[in-house]
Length: 618
Ligand code: PEP
Ligand code: MG
Image (cartoon, rainbow, N blue to C red; front, side, top):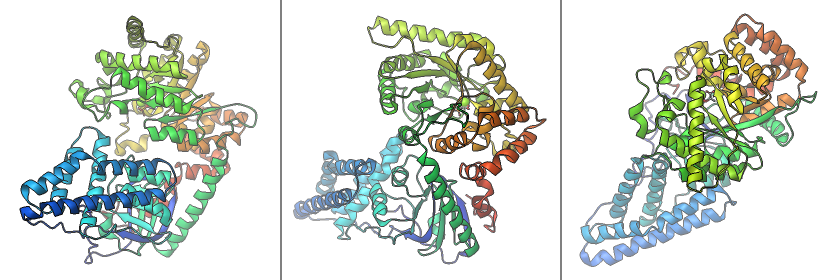
Protein backbone atom coordinates (compact mmCIF):
# COMPACT_ATOMS: atom_id res chain seq x y z
CA UNK A 1 0.00 0.00 0.00
CA UNK A 2 1.25 3.42 -0.81
CA UNK A 3 2.39 5.55 2.08
CA UNK A 4 -0.17 3.88 4.29
CA UNK A 5 1.60 0.74 5.37
CA UNK A 6 3.29 -0.09 8.62
CA UNK A 7 6.71 1.08 9.65
CA UNK A 8 9.10 -1.83 9.91
CA UNK A 9 9.28 -3.42 13.35
CA UNK A 10 11.58 -1.31 15.45
CA UNK A 11 14.54 -3.52 16.26
CA UNK A 12 15.64 -1.27 19.10
CA UNK A 13 12.39 -1.90 20.89
CA UNK A 14 12.29 -4.70 23.40
CA UNK A 15 10.16 -7.40 21.89
CA UNK A 16 8.50 -8.62 25.05
CA UNK A 17 5.01 -9.83 25.59
CA UNK A 18 2.31 -7.36 24.68
CA UNK A 19 -1.43 -7.22 25.20
CA UNK A 20 -3.58 -4.67 23.40
CA UNK A 21 -7.20 -3.83 23.06
CA UNK A 22 -9.03 -3.06 19.84
CA UNK A 23 -12.54 -3.37 18.45
CA UNK A 24 -13.96 -6.89 18.52
CA UNK A 25 -14.87 -7.26 14.83
CA UNK A 26 -15.54 -10.96 14.34
CA UNK A 27 -16.03 -13.43 17.20
CA UNK A 28 -13.80 -16.41 17.96
CA UNK A 29 -10.29 -16.99 19.25
CA UNK A 30 -7.32 -17.40 16.90
CA UNK A 31 -3.85 -18.52 17.99
CA UNK A 32 -0.93 -18.83 15.62
CA UNK A 33 2.21 -17.37 14.10
CA UNK A 34 1.97 -13.76 12.93
CA UNK A 35 2.05 -13.03 9.22
CA UNK A 36 2.88 -9.38 8.84
CA UNK A 37 1.58 -7.68 5.72
CA UNK A 38 3.92 -4.84 4.89
CA UNK A 39 2.95 -3.06 1.76
CA UNK A 40 4.98 0.06 1.99
CA UNK A 41 7.75 -0.96 -0.28
CA UNK A 42 6.38 0.65 -3.42
CA UNK A 43 7.99 3.92 -4.37
CA UNK A 44 5.95 5.90 -6.83
CA UNK A 45 8.22 7.04 -9.70
CA UNK A 46 7.73 10.59 -10.98
CA UNK A 47 9.25 11.71 -14.26
CA UNK A 48 8.44 13.83 -17.31
CA UNK A 49 7.60 12.24 -20.63
CA UNK A 50 7.95 13.50 -24.20
CA UNK A 51 4.76 14.54 -25.97
CA UNK A 52 5.41 11.77 -28.48
CA UNK A 53 5.31 9.21 -25.64
CA UNK A 54 1.81 10.20 -24.42
CA UNK A 55 0.05 7.54 -26.46
CA UNK A 56 2.25 4.74 -25.14
CA UNK A 57 1.93 6.00 -21.59
CA UNK A 58 -1.88 5.98 -21.84
CA UNK A 59 -1.64 2.49 -23.33
CA UNK A 60 0.42 1.37 -20.31
CA UNK A 61 -2.20 2.78 -17.96
CA UNK A 62 -5.05 1.01 -19.77
CA UNK A 63 -3.14 -2.24 -19.75
CA UNK A 64 -2.59 -1.95 -15.98
CA UNK A 65 -6.33 -1.36 -15.50
CA UNK A 66 -7.11 -4.43 -17.58
CA UNK A 67 -4.67 -6.58 -15.59
CA UNK A 68 -6.20 -5.37 -12.33
CA UNK A 69 -9.69 -6.23 -13.61
CA UNK A 70 -8.48 -9.72 -14.44
CA UNK A 71 -6.89 -10.20 -11.04
CA UNK A 72 -10.09 -9.16 -9.28
CA UNK A 73 -12.09 -11.45 -11.54
CA UNK A 74 -9.82 -14.37 -10.66
CA UNK A 75 -10.25 -13.74 -6.93
CA UNK A 76 -14.00 -13.39 -7.36
CA UNK A 77 -14.22 -16.69 -9.20
CA UNK A 78 -12.63 -18.46 -6.25
CA UNK A 79 -15.20 -17.16 -3.80
CA UNK A 80 -18.66 -18.43 -2.97
CA UNK A 81 -21.58 -16.15 -3.78
CA UNK A 82 -22.30 -13.54 -1.15
CA UNK A 83 -21.47 -10.16 0.23
CA UNK A 84 -17.72 -10.41 -0.41
CA UNK A 85 -18.25 -11.07 -4.12
CA UNK A 86 -20.46 -8.00 -4.29
CA UNK A 87 -17.67 -5.90 -2.81
CA UNK A 88 -15.20 -7.08 -5.44
CA UNK A 89 -17.78 -6.36 -8.13
CA UNK A 90 -18.10 -2.82 -6.82
CA UNK A 91 -14.32 -2.43 -7.04
CA UNK A 92 -14.37 -3.62 -10.63
CA UNK A 93 -16.98 -0.98 -11.38
CA UNK A 94 -14.80 1.69 -9.81
CA UNK A 95 -12.01 0.66 -12.18
CA UNK A 96 -14.34 1.19 -15.13
CA UNK A 97 -15.33 4.68 -13.98
CA UNK A 98 -15.02 6.92 -17.08
CA UNK A 99 -14.15 9.96 -14.90
CA UNK A 100 -11.17 8.13 -13.46
CA UNK A 101 -9.86 7.20 -16.92
CA UNK A 102 -10.51 10.66 -18.22
CA UNK A 103 -8.71 12.39 -15.32
CA UNK A 104 -5.65 10.14 -15.35
CA UNK A 105 -5.27 10.27 -19.11
CA UNK A 106 -5.84 14.04 -19.04
CA UNK A 107 -3.01 14.46 -16.57
CA UNK A 108 -0.64 12.32 -18.64
CA UNK A 109 -1.52 14.37 -21.72
CA UNK A 110 -1.60 17.85 -20.17
CA UNK A 111 1.15 17.63 -17.59
CA UNK A 112 3.37 15.22 -19.54
CA UNK A 113 3.97 12.99 -16.54
CA UNK A 114 4.33 9.23 -16.27
CA UNK A 115 1.21 7.06 -15.79
CA UNK A 116 2.15 5.97 -12.24
CA UNK A 117 2.33 9.56 -11.04
CA UNK A 118 -0.83 10.68 -12.85
CA UNK A 119 -2.78 7.74 -11.47
CA UNK A 120 -1.60 8.21 -7.87
CA UNK A 121 -2.37 11.93 -8.00
CA UNK A 122 -5.93 11.34 -9.25
CA UNK A 123 -6.55 8.47 -6.81
CA UNK A 124 -5.20 10.66 -4.00
CA UNK A 125 -7.75 13.40 -4.84
CA UNK A 126 -10.64 10.92 -4.90
CA UNK A 127 -9.47 9.32 -1.66
CA UNK A 128 -9.23 12.71 0.07
CA UNK A 129 -12.71 13.76 -1.07
CA UNK A 130 -14.19 10.51 0.21
CA UNK A 131 -12.28 10.70 3.48
CA UNK A 132 -13.70 14.15 4.15
CA UNK A 133 -17.29 13.19 3.22
CA UNK A 134 -19.97 13.62 5.87
CA UNK A 135 -21.36 10.17 5.19
CA UNK A 136 -19.46 7.44 7.01
CA UNK A 137 -20.08 4.94 4.24
CA UNK A 138 -18.33 7.23 1.76
CA UNK A 139 -15.46 7.72 4.19
CA UNK A 140 -15.02 3.99 4.49
CA UNK A 141 -14.92 3.64 0.71
CA UNK A 142 -11.80 5.84 0.65
CA UNK A 143 -9.68 2.85 1.62
CA UNK A 144 -11.11 0.90 -1.34
CA UNK A 145 -9.75 3.58 -3.67
CA UNK A 146 -6.34 3.33 -1.99
CA UNK A 147 -6.28 -0.44 -2.35
CA UNK A 148 -7.23 -0.26 -6.01
CA UNK A 149 -4.64 2.41 -6.74
CA UNK A 150 -2.06 0.22 -5.03
CA UNK A 151 -2.93 -2.72 -7.24
CA UNK A 152 -2.94 -0.68 -10.47
CA UNK A 153 0.43 0.77 -9.47
CA UNK A 154 1.88 -2.70 -8.94
CA UNK A 155 0.70 -3.69 -12.37
CA UNK A 156 2.20 -0.54 -13.93
CA UNK A 157 5.50 -1.37 -12.28
CA UNK A 158 5.31 -5.01 -13.28
CA UNK A 159 5.24 -6.00 -9.60
CA UNK A 160 2.36 -8.43 -10.14
CA UNK A 161 -0.59 -8.73 -7.84
CA UNK A 162 1.53 -9.27 -4.73
CA UNK A 163 -0.85 -11.78 -3.30
CA UNK A 164 -0.85 -12.20 0.42
CA UNK A 165 0.07 -15.80 0.93
CA UNK A 166 0.07 -16.64 4.61
CA UNK A 167 0.45 -20.20 5.80
CA UNK A 168 -2.72 -21.92 7.05
CA UNK A 169 -3.52 -20.99 10.63
CA UNK A 170 -1.46 -17.77 10.56
CA UNK A 171 -2.65 -14.59 12.23
CA UNK A 172 -2.57 -11.87 9.58
CA UNK A 173 -1.48 -8.51 10.92
CA UNK A 174 -1.77 -5.47 8.71
CA UNK A 175 -2.20 -1.74 8.88
CA UNK A 176 -5.28 -2.24 6.71
CA UNK A 177 -6.59 -4.94 4.40
CA UNK A 178 -8.51 -4.54 1.18
CA UNK A 179 -11.66 -6.59 0.61
CA UNK A 180 -9.74 -8.55 -2.01
CA UNK A 181 -7.00 -9.29 0.54
CA UNK A 182 -9.52 -10.49 3.08
CA UNK A 183 -11.25 -12.67 0.54
CA UNK A 184 -7.90 -14.26 -0.28
CA UNK A 185 -7.42 -15.03 3.38
CA UNK A 186 -10.52 -17.24 3.36
CA UNK A 187 -8.76 -19.51 0.89
CA UNK A 188 -5.62 -19.51 2.93
CA UNK A 189 -7.58 -20.69 5.98
CA UNK A 190 -5.99 -18.18 8.30
CA UNK A 191 -6.45 -18.28 12.05
CA UNK A 192 -7.26 -14.63 12.60
CA UNK A 193 -6.94 -11.06 11.43
CA UNK A 194 -5.75 -7.93 13.20
CA UNK A 195 -5.65 -4.50 11.59
CA UNK A 196 -4.58 -1.13 12.89
CA UNK A 197 -7.44 0.74 11.26
CA UNK A 198 -11.07 -0.03 10.56
CA UNK A 199 -14.35 0.03 12.38
CA UNK A 200 -17.18 -2.40 12.82
CA UNK A 201 -18.58 -1.55 9.40
CA UNK A 202 -15.33 -1.47 7.45
CA UNK A 203 -15.24 -3.95 4.63
CA UNK A 204 -12.56 -6.13 6.12
CA UNK A 205 -14.61 -6.42 9.32
CA UNK A 206 -17.75 -7.33 7.34
CA UNK A 207 -15.83 -9.93 5.41
CA UNK A 208 -14.13 -11.39 8.44
CA UNK A 209 -17.55 -11.90 10.01
CA UNK A 210 -19.06 -13.41 6.90
CA UNK A 211 -16.03 -15.70 6.55
CA UNK A 212 -16.08 -16.48 10.28
CA UNK A 213 -12.45 -15.53 10.84
CA UNK A 214 -11.77 -14.18 14.35
CA UNK A 215 -10.79 -10.52 13.97
CA UNK A 216 -9.88 -7.46 15.97
CA UNK A 217 -9.59 -4.08 14.25
CA UNK A 218 -8.41 -0.66 15.38
CA UNK A 219 -5.31 -1.89 17.23
CA UNK A 220 -3.21 1.20 16.79
CA UNK A 221 0.53 0.79 16.34
CA UNK A 222 0.50 -3.01 16.41
CA UNK A 223 2.42 -3.52 13.18
CA UNK A 224 5.43 -1.80 14.76
CA UNK A 225 5.56 -4.36 17.49
CA UNK A 226 5.13 -7.65 15.71
CA UNK A 227 7.38 -9.64 13.45
CA UNK A 228 6.36 -12.44 11.12
CA UNK A 229 6.38 -15.75 13.04
CA UNK A 230 5.83 -14.18 16.48
CA UNK A 231 3.13 -16.10 18.31
CA UNK A 232 -0.13 -14.09 18.48
CA UNK A 233 -3.51 -14.59 20.09
CA UNK A 234 -6.60 -12.83 18.67
CA UNK A 235 -9.68 -12.74 20.86
CA UNK A 236 -12.45 -11.45 18.59
CA UNK A 237 -15.01 -11.86 21.38
CA UNK A 238 -13.51 -9.24 23.67
CA UNK A 239 -11.33 -7.30 21.20
CA UNK A 240 -8.02 -8.40 22.72
CA UNK A 241 -4.69 -9.22 21.07
CA UNK A 242 -1.69 -10.79 22.81
CA UNK A 243 1.69 -10.85 21.11
CA UNK A 244 4.36 -13.33 22.16
CA UNK A 245 2.39 -14.96 24.98
CA UNK A 246 4.35 -17.41 27.12
CA UNK A 247 3.64 -21.16 26.74
CA UNK A 248 1.48 -21.26 29.85
CA UNK A 249 -0.70 -18.48 28.45
CA UNK A 250 -0.90 -20.17 25.06
CA UNK A 251 -2.20 -23.29 26.74
CA UNK A 252 -4.81 -21.21 28.56
CA UNK A 253 -5.96 -19.54 25.35
CA UNK A 254 -6.09 -22.87 23.57
CA UNK A 255 -8.38 -24.15 26.24
CA UNK A 256 -10.50 -20.96 25.99
CA UNK A 257 -10.76 -21.42 22.22
CA UNK A 258 -11.72 -25.04 22.45
CA UNK A 259 -14.43 -24.24 24.95
CA UNK A 260 -15.68 -21.25 22.96
CA UNK A 261 -15.97 -23.21 19.71
CA UNK A 262 -17.69 -26.17 21.32
CA UNK A 263 -20.06 -23.90 23.21
CA UNK A 264 -20.96 -21.85 20.13
CA UNK A 265 -21.76 -24.97 18.15
CA UNK A 266 -23.91 -26.28 20.94
CA UNK A 267 -26.03 -23.19 21.53
CA UNK A 268 -26.42 -22.30 17.87
CA UNK A 269 -27.83 -25.78 17.22
CA UNK A 270 -30.95 -24.71 19.15
CA UNK A 271 -31.42 -21.45 17.26
CA UNK A 272 -34.66 -22.48 15.57
CA UNK A 273 -36.22 -23.96 18.72
CA UNK A 274 -38.59 -21.92 20.88
CA UNK A 275 -37.31 -20.17 24.00
CA UNK A 276 -39.65 -22.04 26.32
CA UNK A 277 -38.87 -23.04 29.89
CA UNK A 278 -39.05 -26.64 31.10
CA UNK A 279 -42.46 -25.86 32.61
CA UNK A 280 -43.85 -24.30 29.46
CA UNK A 281 -43.39 -20.52 29.82
CA UNK A 282 -42.46 -18.92 26.51
CA UNK A 283 -40.04 -16.00 26.44
CA UNK A 284 -39.92 -14.02 23.20
CA UNK A 285 -36.32 -13.25 22.28
CA UNK A 286 -35.90 -10.40 19.84
CA UNK A 287 -32.92 -8.59 18.41
CA UNK A 288 -31.64 -5.06 18.86
CA UNK A 289 -30.33 -3.66 15.60
CA UNK A 290 -29.16 -0.46 14.01
CA UNK A 291 -27.32 -1.65 10.90
CA UNK A 292 -28.33 -3.89 8.04
CA UNK A 293 -25.73 -6.48 9.00
CA UNK A 294 -27.39 -6.89 12.35
CA UNK A 295 -30.68 -7.67 10.63
CA UNK A 296 -29.01 -10.61 8.85
CA UNK A 297 -27.45 -11.67 12.11
CA UNK A 298 -30.85 -11.47 13.86
CA UNK A 299 -32.25 -13.97 11.35
CA UNK A 300 -29.21 -16.25 11.67
CA UNK A 301 -29.40 -16.33 15.45
CA UNK A 302 -33.10 -17.13 15.53
CA UNK A 303 -34.58 -13.81 16.70
CA UNK A 304 -38.35 -13.59 16.77
CA UNK A 305 -38.19 -10.17 15.14
CA UNK A 306 -36.56 -6.91 16.21
CA UNK A 307 -37.46 -5.49 19.61
CA UNK A 308 -35.46 -2.30 19.14
CA UNK A 309 -34.37 -0.83 15.83
CA UNK A 310 -32.26 2.24 16.64
CA UNK A 311 -33.20 4.49 13.73
CA UNK A 312 -30.93 7.36 14.74
CA UNK A 313 -28.13 5.83 12.69
CA UNK A 314 -30.20 6.58 9.60
CA UNK A 315 -29.93 10.26 10.58
CA UNK A 316 -26.22 10.37 11.36
CA UNK A 317 -23.25 11.15 9.09
CA UNK A 318 -25.20 13.07 6.50
CA UNK A 319 -25.89 16.67 5.64
CA UNK A 320 -29.68 16.69 5.89
CA UNK A 321 -32.27 14.50 7.61
CA UNK A 322 -33.70 11.56 5.69
CA UNK A 323 -36.88 12.19 3.72
CA UNK A 324 -40.21 10.45 4.32
CA UNK A 325 -39.50 8.35 1.24
CA UNK A 326 -36.12 7.22 2.63
CA UNK A 327 -37.71 6.20 5.94
CA UNK A 328 -40.36 4.32 4.02
CA UNK A 329 -37.91 2.39 1.84
CA UNK A 330 -35.54 1.66 4.69
CA UNK A 331 -38.27 0.30 6.99
CA UNK A 332 -39.92 -1.67 4.20
CA UNK A 333 -36.62 -3.42 3.33
CA UNK A 334 -36.05 -4.40 6.96
CA UNK A 335 -39.60 -5.69 7.38
CA UNK A 336 -39.16 -7.86 4.30
CA UNK A 337 -36.00 -9.42 5.70
CA UNK A 338 -37.56 -10.22 9.07
CA UNK A 339 -40.92 -11.38 7.73
CA UNK A 340 -43.12 -12.76 9.30
CA UNK A 341 -41.73 -11.40 12.57
CA UNK A 342 -42.43 -7.88 13.83
CA UNK A 343 -39.92 -5.04 13.76
CA UNK A 344 -40.05 -2.31 16.39
CA UNK A 345 -38.71 0.94 15.03
CA UNK A 346 -37.72 3.45 17.66
CA UNK A 347 -38.16 7.02 16.47
CA UNK A 348 -34.91 8.94 16.47
CA UNK A 349 -33.06 9.12 19.77
CA UNK A 350 -30.61 11.83 18.72
CA UNK A 351 -28.78 14.15 21.06
CA UNK A 352 -26.34 13.54 23.92
CA UNK A 353 -23.79 11.09 22.45
CA UNK A 354 -25.66 10.53 19.15
CA UNK A 355 -25.14 13.66 17.14
CA UNK A 356 -26.41 14.68 13.71
CA UNK A 357 -24.62 17.77 12.42
CA UNK A 358 -27.71 19.49 11.07
CA UNK A 359 -29.38 19.62 14.49
CA UNK A 360 -26.27 20.40 16.49
CA UNK A 361 -27.39 23.96 17.14
CA UNK A 362 -30.27 22.67 19.20
CA UNK A 363 -27.93 20.78 21.50
CA UNK A 364 -28.76 20.06 25.07
CA UNK A 365 -26.84 22.81 26.87
CA UNK A 366 -24.20 22.17 29.52
CA UNK A 367 -25.45 18.70 30.25
CA UNK A 368 -26.70 17.10 27.03
CA UNK A 369 -27.79 13.85 28.72
CA UNK A 370 -30.40 15.97 30.51
CA UNK A 371 -31.00 18.43 27.69
CA UNK A 372 -32.90 18.64 24.42
CA UNK A 373 -32.36 15.10 23.26
CA UNK A 374 -34.42 12.26 21.87
CA UNK A 375 -38.20 12.82 22.01
CA UNK A 376 -37.68 16.38 23.24
CA UNK A 377 -35.66 17.07 20.12
CA UNK A 378 -38.26 15.32 17.96
CA UNK A 379 -41.02 17.53 19.31
CA UNK A 380 -38.90 20.57 18.59
CA UNK A 381 -37.82 19.38 15.14
CA UNK A 382 -41.43 18.57 14.29
CA UNK A 383 -41.08 18.26 10.50
CA UNK A 384 -38.20 15.81 10.85
CA UNK A 385 -40.32 13.79 13.26
CA UNK A 386 -43.42 13.89 11.04
CA UNK A 387 -41.42 12.70 8.03
CA UNK A 388 -40.17 9.72 9.99
CA UNK A 389 -43.61 8.80 11.29
CA UNK A 390 -45.16 9.19 7.84
CA UNK A 391 -42.51 6.94 6.29
CA UNK A 392 -43.03 4.31 9.01
CA UNK A 393 -46.83 4.39 8.71
CA UNK A 394 -46.52 3.81 4.99
CA UNK A 395 -44.02 0.97 5.47
CA UNK A 396 -46.39 -0.68 7.95
CA UNK A 397 -48.50 -1.83 5.01
CA UNK A 398 -45.68 -4.25 4.17
CA UNK A 399 -45.36 -6.13 7.45
CA UNK A 400 -45.86 -6.17 11.21
CA UNK A 401 -44.29 -2.84 12.15
CA UNK A 402 -44.41 -1.25 15.59
CA UNK A 403 -43.30 2.25 16.52
CA UNK A 404 -41.62 3.07 19.80
CA UNK A 405 -41.02 6.50 21.32
CA UNK A 406 -37.83 6.95 23.32
CA UNK A 407 -37.17 9.03 26.42
CA UNK A 408 -40.75 9.73 27.47
CA UNK A 409 -40.83 11.48 30.84
CA UNK A 410 -44.52 12.13 31.49
CA UNK A 411 -48.08 12.28 30.34
CA UNK A 412 -48.24 15.65 28.54
CA UNK A 413 -45.07 14.93 26.61
CA UNK A 414 -46.50 11.59 25.52
CA UNK A 415 -49.77 13.22 24.50
CA UNK A 416 -47.86 15.79 22.45
CA UNK A 417 -46.00 12.98 20.66
CA UNK A 418 -49.21 11.06 19.99
CA UNK A 419 -50.72 14.22 18.50
CA UNK A 420 -47.87 14.20 15.97
CA UNK A 421 -49.00 10.74 14.88
CA UNK A 422 -52.48 12.11 14.24
CA UNK A 423 -51.05 14.95 12.22
CA UNK A 424 -48.87 12.57 10.22
CA UNK A 425 -51.89 10.40 9.42
CA UNK A 426 -53.96 13.44 8.41
CA UNK A 427 -51.23 14.65 6.08
CA UNK A 428 -50.84 11.23 4.48
CA UNK A 429 -54.60 11.04 3.97
CA UNK A 430 -54.60 14.51 2.47
CA UNK A 431 -51.86 13.49 0.04
CA UNK A 432 -53.72 10.29 -0.81
CA UNK A 433 -50.81 8.18 0.42
CA UNK A 434 -51.66 4.62 1.45
CA UNK A 435 -50.68 3.95 5.06
CA UNK A 436 -51.59 1.79 8.03
CA UNK A 437 -53.85 3.37 10.62
CA UNK A 438 -53.60 0.78 13.40
CA UNK A 439 -49.84 0.57 13.95
CA UNK A 440 -49.03 -0.35 17.57
CA UNK A 441 -47.32 2.58 19.30
CA UNK A 442 -45.30 1.96 22.44
CA UNK A 443 -42.83 3.81 24.62
CA UNK A 444 -39.46 3.17 26.11
CA UNK A 445 -39.35 3.33 29.86
CA UNK A 446 -35.87 4.67 30.47
CA UNK A 447 -36.39 7.70 32.70
CA UNK A 448 -37.17 6.97 36.37
CA UNK A 449 -40.12 9.40 36.21
CA UNK A 450 -41.72 7.28 33.49
CA UNK A 451 -41.06 4.07 35.41
CA UNK A 452 -42.59 5.41 38.60
CA UNK A 453 -45.58 6.91 36.76
CA UNK A 454 -45.96 3.96 34.37
CA UNK A 455 -49.59 3.42 35.37
CA UNK A 456 -50.40 6.96 34.13
CA UNK A 457 -48.78 6.24 30.77
CA UNK A 458 -49.91 2.67 30.13
CA UNK A 459 -53.51 3.50 29.11
CA UNK A 460 -52.23 5.65 26.25
CA UNK A 461 -49.97 3.12 24.58
CA UNK A 462 -49.84 -0.39 23.12
CA UNK A 463 -46.64 -1.63 24.76
CA UNK A 464 -43.73 -0.75 27.02
CA UNK A 465 -40.07 -1.50 26.50
CA UNK A 466 -37.69 -0.93 29.39
CA UNK A 467 -34.40 0.67 28.41
CA UNK A 468 -32.19 -0.28 31.32
CA UNK A 469 -29.11 1.39 29.88
CA UNK A 470 -30.60 4.81 30.48
CA UNK A 471 -32.83 3.78 33.36
CA UNK A 472 -29.77 2.67 35.35
CA UNK A 473 -27.81 5.77 34.28
CA UNK A 474 -30.52 8.14 35.51
CA UNK A 475 -31.52 6.14 38.59
CA UNK A 476 -28.00 5.75 39.91
CA UNK A 477 -26.72 9.07 38.51
CA UNK A 478 -23.84 7.44 36.65
CA UNK A 479 -22.86 8.62 33.18
CA UNK A 480 -22.96 5.47 31.05
CA UNK A 481 -20.03 6.73 28.96
CA UNK A 482 -17.78 7.38 31.94
CA UNK A 483 -15.57 4.44 32.95
CA UNK A 484 -14.67 6.12 36.22
CA UNK A 485 -18.16 5.57 37.61
CA UNK A 486 -18.55 2.18 35.98
CA UNK A 487 -18.02 0.47 39.34
CA UNK A 488 -21.41 1.89 40.41
CA UNK A 489 -23.24 0.26 37.50
CA UNK A 490 -25.50 -2.19 39.32
CA UNK A 491 -28.40 -3.57 37.28
CA UNK A 492 -29.63 -5.41 40.37
CA UNK A 493 -29.64 -2.31 42.59
CA UNK A 494 -32.87 -2.34 44.64
CA UNK A 495 -33.93 0.97 43.09
CA UNK A 496 -33.68 -0.51 39.60
CA UNK A 497 -35.43 -3.77 40.45
CA UNK A 498 -38.19 -1.86 42.21
CA UNK A 499 -38.84 0.11 39.03
CA UNK A 500 -38.89 -3.03 36.89
CA UNK A 501 -41.61 -4.37 39.11
CA UNK A 502 -43.62 -1.15 39.02
CA UNK A 503 -43.47 -1.07 35.22
CA UNK A 504 -44.40 -4.73 34.88
CA UNK A 505 -47.37 -4.29 37.26
CA UNK A 506 -48.61 -1.19 35.42
CA UNK A 507 -48.36 -3.02 32.09
CA UNK A 508 -50.18 -6.05 33.48
CA UNK A 509 -52.99 -3.89 34.85
CA UNK A 510 -53.39 -2.13 31.49
CA UNK A 511 -53.14 -5.44 29.62
CA UNK A 512 -50.21 -4.39 27.46
CA UNK A 513 -46.96 -6.31 26.83
CA UNK A 514 -43.69 -5.17 28.35
CA UNK A 515 -40.26 -5.99 27.03
CA UNK A 516 -36.72 -5.16 28.16
CA UNK A 517 -34.23 -4.00 25.54
CA UNK A 518 -31.27 -2.63 27.52
CA UNK A 519 -27.92 -4.45 27.60
CA UNK A 520 -29.06 -6.20 30.76
CA UNK A 521 -31.25 -8.44 28.59
CA UNK A 522 -28.18 -9.85 26.82
CA UNK A 523 -26.33 -10.69 30.01
CA UNK A 524 -26.83 -14.37 30.86
CA UNK A 525 -26.36 -13.58 34.54
CA UNK A 526 -29.70 -11.79 34.58
CA UNK A 527 -31.90 -14.09 32.50
CA UNK A 528 -33.35 -15.85 35.54
CA UNK A 529 -34.06 -12.62 37.40
CA UNK A 530 -35.76 -10.91 34.45
CA UNK A 531 -37.92 -13.86 33.46
CA UNK A 532 -38.58 -14.56 37.16
CA UNK A 533 -39.79 -10.97 37.56
CA UNK A 534 -42.42 -11.64 34.92
CA UNK A 535 -40.81 -10.21 31.78
CA UNK A 536 -41.82 -12.27 28.79
CA UNK A 537 -39.96 -10.45 26.06
CA UNK A 538 -36.24 -9.65 25.95
CA UNK A 539 -34.45 -7.85 23.15
CA UNK A 540 -30.68 -7.98 22.77
CA UNK A 541 -27.78 -7.92 20.30
CA UNK A 542 -28.35 -10.86 17.95
CA UNK A 543 -25.37 -13.00 18.89
CA UNK A 544 -26.52 -13.09 22.53
CA UNK A 545 -29.82 -14.75 21.61
CA UNK A 546 -28.66 -18.40 21.41
CA UNK A 547 -26.98 -18.19 24.82
CA UNK A 548 -30.03 -16.69 26.54
CA UNK A 549 -32.34 -19.09 24.72
CA UNK A 550 -30.29 -22.03 25.89
CA UNK A 551 -30.61 -20.88 29.51
CA UNK A 552 -34.37 -20.42 29.20
CA UNK A 553 -34.79 -23.87 27.70
CA UNK A 554 -32.86 -25.52 30.53
CA UNK A 555 -34.64 -23.76 33.39
CA UNK A 556 -38.04 -23.88 34.99
CA UNK A 557 -40.03 -20.73 35.53
CA UNK A 558 -40.57 -21.72 39.16
CA UNK A 559 -36.87 -21.66 39.98
CA UNK A 560 -36.45 -18.35 38.14
CA UNK A 561 -39.31 -16.84 40.09
CA UNK A 562 -37.91 -18.09 43.40
CA UNK A 563 -34.56 -16.46 42.66
CA UNK A 564 -36.20 -13.20 41.53
CA UNK A 565 -38.10 -13.00 44.81
CA UNK A 566 -34.91 -13.46 46.81
CA UNK A 567 -33.04 -10.93 44.71
CA UNK A 568 -35.74 -8.29 45.06
CA UNK A 569 -35.52 -8.68 48.84
CA UNK A 570 -31.73 -8.17 48.88
CA UNK A 571 -30.51 -5.09 50.69
CA UNK A 572 -28.08 -3.96 47.98
CA UNK A 573 -27.13 -4.48 44.38
CA UNK A 574 -23.97 -6.28 45.40
CA UNK A 575 -25.83 -8.61 47.67
CA UNK A 576 -28.32 -9.34 44.88
CA UNK A 577 -25.47 -9.99 42.47
CA UNK A 578 -23.87 -12.46 44.89
CA UNK A 579 -27.17 -14.30 45.28
CA UNK A 580 -27.56 -14.61 41.53
CA UNK A 581 -24.02 -15.82 41.09
CA UNK A 582 -24.42 -18.41 43.78
CA UNK A 583 -27.47 -19.92 42.09
CA UNK A 584 -26.86 -19.33 38.38
CA UNK A 585 -23.09 -19.73 38.01
CA UNK A 586 -22.86 -23.43 38.95
CA UNK A 587 -25.64 -24.25 36.48
CA UNK A 588 -24.51 -22.01 33.60
CA UNK A 589 -20.80 -21.47 34.06
CA UNK A 590 -20.03 -21.61 30.33
CA UNK A 591 -22.92 -19.35 29.40
CA UNK A 592 -21.70 -16.72 31.80
CA UNK A 593 -18.16 -16.94 30.53
CA UNK A 594 -18.88 -16.92 26.80
CA UNK A 595 -21.79 -14.53 27.03
CA UNK A 596 -19.29 -11.89 28.08
CA UNK A 597 -20.53 -11.73 31.64
CA UNK A 598 -17.63 -13.54 33.19
CA UNK A 599 -15.39 -13.26 30.19
CA UNK A 600 -13.44 -10.58 31.95
CA UNK A 601 -12.51 -13.04 34.68
CA UNK A 602 -10.96 -15.42 32.22
CA UNK A 603 -8.00 -15.52 29.87
CA UNK A 604 -8.87 -12.05 28.57
CA UNK A 605 -8.42 -10.21 31.81
CA UNK A 606 -5.29 -12.04 32.82
CA UNK A 607 -3.83 -11.27 29.40
CA UNK A 608 -4.43 -7.56 29.86
CA UNK A 609 -3.31 -7.51 33.45
CA UNK A 610 -0.27 -9.74 33.33
CA UNK A 611 3.18 -8.32 32.73
CA UNK A 612 2.09 -6.17 29.83
CA UNK A 613 3.81 -3.12 31.21
CA UNK A 614 2.83 0.52 30.83
CA UNK A 615 1.36 1.70 27.58
CA UNK A 616 0.56 -1.71 26.26
CA UNK A 617 -3.15 -1.55 26.89
CA UNK A 618 -4.69 0.38 24.10
C1 PEP B 1 -31.59 1.92 26.79
O1 PEP B 1 -31.46 3.08 27.17
O2 PEP B 1 -31.59 0.92 27.54
C2 PEP B 1 -31.75 1.62 25.36
C3 PEP B 1 -32.01 0.41 24.92
O3 PEP B 1 -31.56 2.64 24.47
P1 PEP B 1 -30.11 3.20 24.05
O4 PEP B 1 -29.09 2.23 24.55
O5 PEP B 1 -30.14 3.33 22.59
O6 PEP B 1 -30.08 4.52 24.77
MG1 MG C 1 -31.87 4.79 25.90
